[in-house]
Length: 273
Image 1 (cartoon, rainbow, N blue to C red):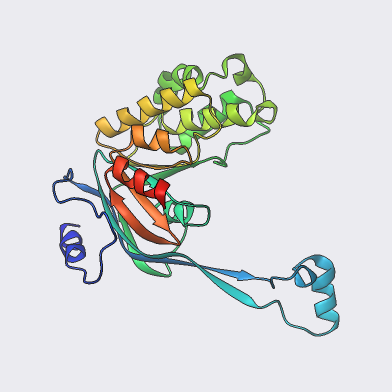
Image 2 (cartoon, helix red, strand yellow):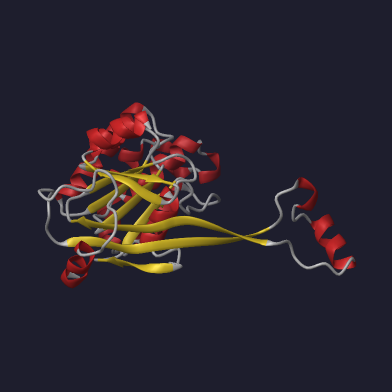
């Protein structure tokens, strides 16, 4: 991995504005993203008359027409970055800038079109739609979620009440997830995912539906993860949360890194842009 960092430091070409300063915290790298490109292939024409519903599909079959024309969406374009133990990296950008796509690629859920992603340990992605089973109770979801993260039965018993208390769902823990509000579901997802210290925790808008008290607790939990030598990537539209939580911010614009550096400087530039 050290060789990769050396190679990346010698990559030629114009650097994005506000690249990370040379005196930034260093140590063991946790994530290396090397000239990453992610391309989606989308089938379907742009006009309403040609959208891919069942009636139009049947019409095309009858007329012996092919499937709608394929369109390529270049969601991430040549992103290169290195994160280190103890980093909390906020990712900002307008809708469609590639934030969620980048996190999914780091988590190993999207294959690169070109370029590479290297991670030290197993990244864990926490999003608003993180999979919990709506028909099961909160209690069962806590147990299964902890097992899915590799925790032992003893660790689950040790962490169970802490997860309930942190999420604030209280007696609702005995009810099916289908009865929960979106905020309750988001709080429980975060409480489960952060119950274990991850090498790399990727958070995609999972704090957006929590109240002020829960966001404060979440910020403290993220700081604890950092202090235990973990790395956190945080996507959130609430720039104040990012500025108060992260030691570094990356600004994505149309799939490219436009700025990477101090949170205050990057967010100020982003607000002006």
